[in-house]
Image (tube, rainbow, N blue to C red; front, side, top):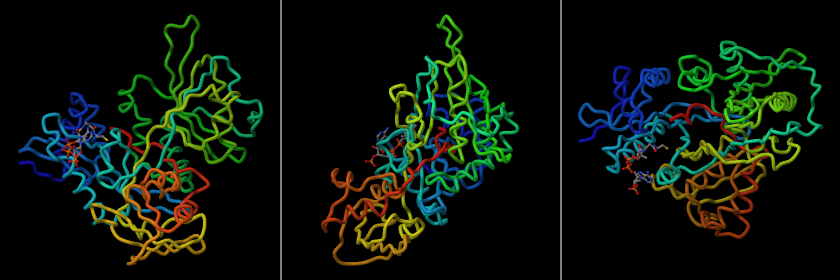
Length: 412
Ligand SMILES: CC(C)(COP(=O)(O)OP(=O)(O)OC[C@H]1O[C@@H](n2cnc3c(N)ncnc32)[C@H](O)[C@@H]1OP(=O)(O)O)[C@@H](O)C(=O)NCCC(=O)NCCS
């Protein structure tokens, strides 16, 4: 019989072994240390067959920034794995049900995860909500950015050490996430992952850390990148991989992108996770220099509908009666959303409704990056009163696209 239980620090090596083996990795000391660094009591679920751990899931508290500059309590779910011998027996199903129930009971209004398997989580009420991009730019000819991009800033580009990054990075990032819809806080283990030597031994290359400090001495941007040598070339050439790009304003963004694209001997620049509306492709001399892939889509699961909907602000006032279909029952029922002065009052109603929508599709709209008209065309919204989908769309849209910079949920 399979039983679920909370994982203590002494259970961690066995839990870690199960997690590694699900991803075809034999356990190593480094991997176990990484799990130790992320460990917090009460966050790990293990599924056990006797004393053998056969399923893993981490559910950690986060704060998620929503439109309007506030945050809501979220449950970040990751490390979902079931060992090869125990799959398709309902272990994920039981772990997810347990995690969502305890998240809701402990006051988490929403759950968030970054799936590697897109077909898995819709059945639990998750919907794709926050997209980001991976961009690769051909830098072979040089002069990759348009001349208009500011090159004579008054600030200072500084190469800093890993240790300095552990100090400066979290302060900069906390200022950034206050205004970035879709961002969460980063735990200290995330910064260790970026900067500490024992974490970095998992990677083939050591990164460089570069900040922008403006004329008042305020640090307003950080990029982190590593380079790999292209052996086959006759000349010395590198591919650059930018793994961190955090900017508080346009000055730091322009200065640091210009810095990156002016590095000598770099054939290609890959930016592994960049906001949908970062103007990088518009800064290029030719848009065709870039190839773009959508990556790291974060999925949301609304657990407390009145709390979640009344936390954010809206682009316009209006009133809608919405029937929400939620098989797990957390938000199932009919609701009136009445928006005045950009804030919503949300209350249960009975009788006829304007719109019918699944809880997963509502999650796709929540952060402002979705399009209700498209969902309606795809039969994911049923419109009962004409014009209500358009109103829903206009209310939920945001001027800035949501973005979730890496926060650890993407690490498997
Ligand atoms: C994905 C994984 C966690 C599923 O665990 P599991 O215990 O076998 O899943 P369950 O038996 O509880 O299945 C739950 C549901 O998901 C479906 N499902 C399971 N694995 C699936 C897969 N790989 N693709 C699509 N559907 C899948 C099941 O059919 C079941 O559907 P139902 O609700 O309609 O009955 C497991 O296969 C695994 O560890 N894979 C490798 C690691 C991984 O991909 N983790 C997910 C990271 S996002």
